[in-house]
Length: 271
Ligand SMILES: Nc1ncnc2c1ncn2[C@@H]1O[C@H](COP(=O)(O)OP(=O)(O)OP(=O)(O)O)[C@@H](O)[C@H]1O
Image (cartoon, rainbow, N blue to C red; front, side, top):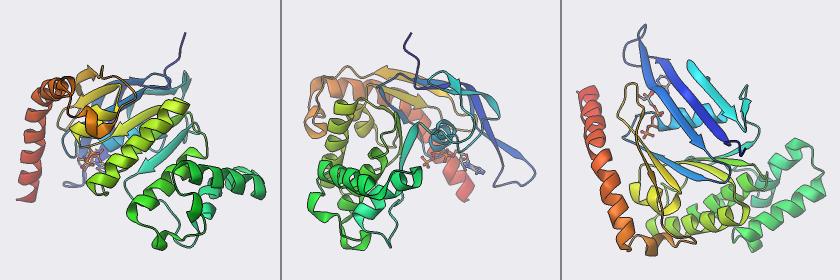
């Protein structure tokens, strides 16, 4: 049997309420979500519904208050060592060059310096930064820094990649280039990807499956769509196809109401 790389079963996560200390806020409840080995799954949902909370549970950074998390069939205890992460925020250390940043995780793992450096240089080449290994983060553009972060994640050869809006800070052209590069790397290596995004177009263009979360509190999946668009995909071109538009319409019909609810909740909090 092919074990799921990530299996969240009936998970809930409750926090101390930031608005009313002493009260508890259930961000997600009764969420079951699996990612098959080699599958690319996106989670979309209204702002604040609990997407990052789910990702953090899969990363082992947050313990579910109910339910279980299994990674390749094993209960997850502590940090998920089979996963690499890429978040919206910058992950490069400003005092290290690109190559020093990319090799840091390997040396931390005990790989000797010259092997780590060779692997880091190889990954920088693969993400299109071959000649830029000696640049510091402040000497690189936002897109180059994202490429270096991608190399930093992939050099560790994780089985699972957890991504929380990794490209949202980029301009649209750089973003599309990065999305295509990620897809090409993913197709050659067939990692499992759990991808969080606000952007429904991005979710459909990239994924094998899109899961929709309801507005919080107690957010949970309310829809799941298999994305049967052909691969390899060019994220800009695929958005022009009739099937993409059909899928977009079907998913938006489910998501729209939740987005409006999420927006209303934010407005009420702001008053
Ligand atoms: N450590 C925490 N303590 C208290 N509440 C928290 C904590 N982390 C998250 N929350 C709350 O849980 C809910 C879900 O947060 P989460 O960041 O998972 O949502 P999200 O869908 O990723 O949001 P966004 O789309 O805005 O990035 C929010 O209401 C948030 O305020």
